[in-house]
Amino acid sequence: MIRVGIVGFGYWGPNIVRCFSDLPGTKLTAVCDKSLDRLKQIKERYPVVQAFDDFDQLLAADLIDAVVIATPTASHFALAQKALERGLHVMVEKPLAETTEQCRDLIMLAEAKNRTLFVGHVFLHSSPVIKLREMVAEGELGRINYISSRRLNLGPVRRDVNALFDLATHDISMMLYLLGDRPIRVSCSGIDLLQPGNHDVCNLTMHFPENRMGMIHVSWIDPRKERVLTVVGDRKMAVYDDLEQEKIKIYDKGIVAPPATGDFADFQISYRYGGSYSPFINEREPLKAECADFIRCIADNKIPLTDGENGLAVVEVLEAANQSLREHGAPIAIDSERGANDATLLKRAR
Ligand SMILES: NC(=O)c1ccc[n+]([C@@H]2O[C@H](COP(=O)([O-])OP(=O)(O)OC[C@H]3O[C@@H](n4cnc5c(N)ncnc54)[C@H](O)[C@@H]3O)[C@@H](O)[C@H]2O)c1
Image (cartoon, rainbow, N blue to C red; front, top):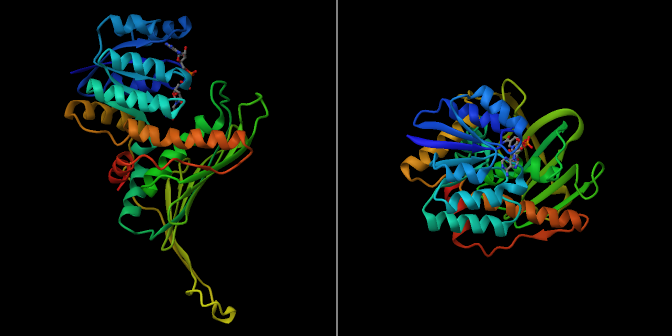
């Protein structure tokens, strides 16, 4: 039985607490939140669980083998570091940390302590994304030329991170997973309307090897909620709309261009307008699947799909995109000096 504690019982933490409260092979033993108001709610809703208002006290109580960190991003590194140093397995909500340096420190610490470091890239545990990944791997969509996404809503507005860190993290993790690759160059522009220096609306472009692209539009000041990701392959195209009942729609459409001869008369493009269909998807709650995977990885001593390296790959993009934001959309190359880490990322995504 793996004893689990959760730190952070704000907006997202209660969902994680709910998932762990009846997860086989685990015992939810402690929840921690520094807000006394939230602490009162923990005690009311989970009277048998030990409640703490101080993370150090939770660690000192020696009640847990694993901890889930669901606090604001700025606190992820310090809390995860303390927990790993204490010898706990750690799951950190997305994004893993604020900087790539912090991510690398956590990865090294987890390795040194031989503990599982797991990142909450929840969409990599969702059935539609897994289905899309299978279709891409089986070549059903052909060569993937680009992926675009829109993640829009009116709120919730964050104070500790910009819309890129809060929202685009999800889309970046999905695009890296679906393409089995990481970008070589990114550029990002945006506007800060509500809090100076904290962008509310961002457009991120990622250039991948072999002339492929990812585009992400995020905003928390948009009138309508949208959660749409479009995968454009040269055989078929797929649209994943997370708000729809039938979440994935496959379009048998495409464009065929003849090989370039330099002769304008030879350039006859043909358009293919086939039908569309929604593949069957075995739906499950992504967060529950994520929590179960964390526990399975600990129990089986298995490297998670969403391990520290995966968290680092996403924060690399976020960090470069933030630099581009500050430089008004200037293209920022992503350091290619990752060697073995790259190979691991690709191997696992394929
Ligand atoms: N996967 C998803 O879809 C998803 C959705 C929402 C949020 N999140 C992530 O979850 C995390 C938390 O987001 P949220 O929306 O719940 O934030 P929130 O601000 O609503 O809640 C955070 C809670 O953590 C507590 N807290 C902060 N620092 C603490 C500390 N040092 N010790 C103990 N408690 C502390 C606060 O009192 C608060 O109750 C973030 O990393 C966010 O990115 C993920």
